[in-house]
Amino acid sequence: MKTALRIAAMSILLAGSAMALTSERMAQIPLDKMTPDQRSVADAIMSGPRKSMNGPFNAWLRSPKLADRLQKVGEYIRFDTSLDKRVNEMAIIMTAQYWGSQYEWYAHAPLAIKAGLDPTIVAAIGAGRKPDNMKDDEAIVWEFTTQLRRDHGVDEAIYQKAVDKFGEQGVMDLVAVNGYYDVVSMTLNVAHVLPPQGSELPFRQAGR
Image 1 (cartoon, rainbow, N blue to C red):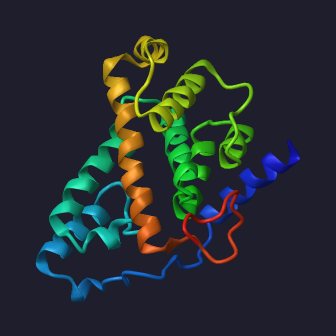
Image 2: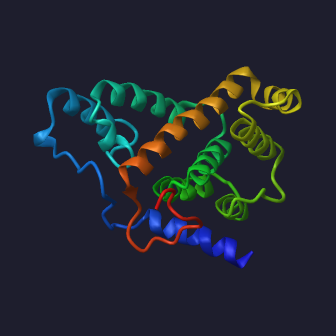
């Protein structure tokens, strides 16, 4: 319990850190060096609910049309999904752990706790373990997400549980949050987008 709470508390602390995020590949593009298409996408992101270009967006700007489409999908998934933020963030950090994406964990583990996910559940996910004492909707998200990645589909039992709990729209939103953050995590890993130096994280960066 103490270890779980320490990891959770450190995640919250790091989320408020003023240390600059770094990337070893795909250098940051200054606003005055962007093409008109890149600047249009950057302005849309910075004027939206995210307010910044942190995360995968700098890398995505290498393909501005793709960046624009992905960031719009992500805005829905982050801010307008039919899923409760608590279980939405749970799916996101499960994705971060699956891909070994340290930046994604750094960014979203504190948001999961803020949304009401128990810190011990966050710690278990970070350690790659099935959490204990999950609420009904959390257990559904865990099993659905686990089956989807492991088996490339879900069985009838968990599908029906998900439909009963979230409705068909919620099931599609659950599929989408997993798929979108797969793309995000893959981008972060390929671009070597890193959390602040010295961040305490529960797993190693994939491929490093």
